[in-house]
Every structure is written in structure tokens, then in C-alpha cells.
Length: 374
Ligand SMILES: Cc1cc2nc3c(=O)[nH]c(=O)nc-3n(C[C@H](O)[C@H](O)[C@H](O)COP(=O)(O)OP(=O)(O)OC[C@H]3O[C@@H](n4cnc5c(N)ncnc54)[C@H](O)[C@@H]3O)c2cc1C
Image (cartoon, rainbow, N blue to C red; front, top):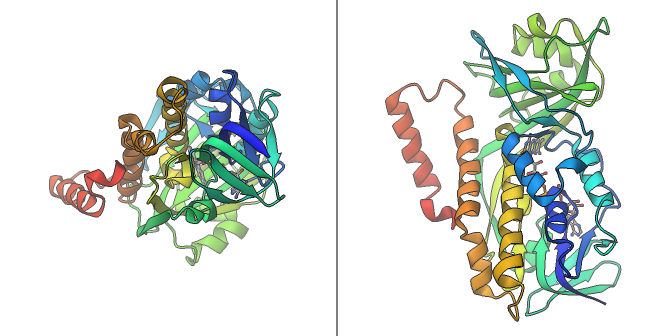
């Protein structure tokens, strides 16, 4: 039996940033994960400037892998105009390598318990049942299990979804056919007219390799999907007619990873002694690049509340739990992430007419009332 101050279930980006943020202050903490290491999955592969700032605050920025220099000046093309933008402190990373590096660098007094949590029972000291037969008791149980819903369900929580908000993302590596270097640090290509439900393509370095992420609203059943998988370079050229003028002749250097995402948000989540963070609480459209902002904001708010007001309370009660979810910074970040998802669905030309803008604003507030994020 483990008796802890904080038990974190899930050693992903959320759980590990939290573990680092609260470590070293005399509290008994452990992280539980069903996997021995994060596998090579397609998740966040860019850290933006504001996200880097929060990681610096939690002491995890230098754990990113590969630890390369900021991408810096990036070309951005919308089909007619090319602009150079300075992405300042933007890093290309491997999600799995970064998460595994954060896991390896946990201090020795923060163990990772390798087991799947099968049930959480709330109380002044919450109880976690592990599939290994072990039991954990903790003052605060943090659920950071990504898109896995089972534990939240075991506590009577449920998810709401919106069938219209979906996303299909493709990720792969490319190289120039002649083996030479690309003539840019990073390159983004947006489509002004969007009949095929394509958001944009972004090309950026991860270490010494060049990664491509393609974000779309394609249905998994669209005929474009198998073509992108098997005839990737040719299909890219058809979807993005000017692409090769910027990249030169290219070839595929890896398999194509395809991930489908749908919007959900947790309900019935006010349970004493239990907090849900990151993707376990609300999903994110990969196209918006706001997932890590949401994760890191949850971590900042929770670690500040715990280290401040909560540490010396006899228990983390219902009022404390509500204070976390209603925290202005957290609620605003969740809502902004949802808004970006909703608006990105209309493409870059969608905000040009005043009537169109007003209709969209009205539709958004009807579908997602303002109290949605409190
Ligand atoms: C294709 C794609 C591209 C993206 N690109 C970006 C981007 O460019 N920028 C950005 O900011 N965001 C991006 N995101 C979003 C971002 O990746 C996520 O918001 C973030 O990874 C969520 O981290 P997490 O820790 O909440 O979940 P995860 O990383 O999924 O971690 C969950 C962990 O919980 C463990 N677990 C699950 N169930 C149990 C259990 N019962 N017991 C024990 N352990 C358990 C899992 O093994 C896993 O280790 C992208 C997402 C996708 C899908």
C-alpha cells in the first residue's frame, strides 16, 4: 500500500509536467502509468513560445528531445502571398522522446509505478486500485490519462461530444531527392479555398530530419486518405499546387501516421479529492496547436493552488476542486482552445464578411454557452 500526498495517474505530457512542478517540496508523490515508456505516437511536435515559457516555469523545457535550437524565421504561404514570420521560441520535438526524457529525469523520490489504474474511489484519502493488485491512497488523485475515459467513468463522470468537431491529421518525414538541405527553417502552406476540408500543411525540423504535419477535417472515409497514405508526395502536390516550388523535389522518408480526433469535454467532474487534467478533461484539435497550452495551464493552476492554499488543509474538498475548474486562467484557456477548433473549421477566408462573422459568433455561443467552461 502506498500512502501519498499526490498520486498522478498517467505519465504523459500532463502528468509528468505536474510531477516536475510539485516535486522537491517535501510531499510524497508518485506517478502511475500502464506503459513502461511512451511509444512513437503522433501528438504535439512543436512547442510554441508561450508553451516554452510555462515549461521553463515547471523546470521541463530543457528536457525536450531533441534539444535543438528554436526554428526561428519561417515562410508562410496562403496560395497567393508569401510572408516571413519569426516564430521566436518555437521548437520541433519528438513527443515520445520528450515525454520519455521527462520521465527519466524525475527525481528519485518521485517513483513511476508501472501498472494500469482500474478504479478510483473518492474520499478524504482517495483510493486507486491497480491491476497489479496494489492499492494507492492519496490526499489528491490527479487523472491525466489522455483520451482514456475508463477511470473518469468509474467516478460517475461522463463526456459530452459535438459530432461536427472532428479532425484528421497526417504526420511523416521528408527529404530532398538530391539529398541537399531545404532552403527554409520552417514552411507553412494554407489553402484559401478549402473544398477538400484541408486546414494546412506545416514543415519543420525535428533534430536533423524534416517533419511534415498535415491537418485536415477529412472524413476517414474520404478517398484522399488512402492516396495520402500510399502516394503521399504526389497527393501533396495535387492538394498544394505550389508546394514543390518551395521544397524542391522531395521524397517520403518514413511511414505516414494518421490520427483522428473528435471534440469531447468532461461533465460531472466535481468529485472531492480528484482532479482531471489535460486531454482527459477536454480534447483539442491538433490543427490549433493549443493542446500543450491547455495541458500546461492546467498544471500551472493546479500546482500553484496545491503549493499555496491546499497543502495545509485536512483534505482537498469539493470547494477546492470547484476552484480549480473555475479558475479564470484555466476556464479561459479551455474556452479559447474550443473556439480555435470551431473557427479553424471555416478556413482563413471565413472571417472576411461581417454577416458571416456575426452568424458564426451567434452559432458558437448557442452551441457552447459561456458557462460551458466554469
Ligand atoms: C495528431 C496530434 C497532433 C497534435 N499537435 C499538437 C501541437 O502541435 N501542439 C499542441 O500544443 N498540441 C498538439 N496536440 C495535442 C497534445 O498532443 C495533447 O494535448 C497532449 O499530448 C495531451 O497530453 P496528456 O498528458 O493529457 O495525454 P497523453 O500524452 O495521452 O498521456 C496519457 C497517459 O496516461 C496513461 N494512461 C491511460 N490510461 C491509464 C490507466 N488506466 N492507468 C495508468 N495509465 C494510464 C497513458 O499510457 C499515457 O501515458 C496534438 C494532438 C494530436 C492527436
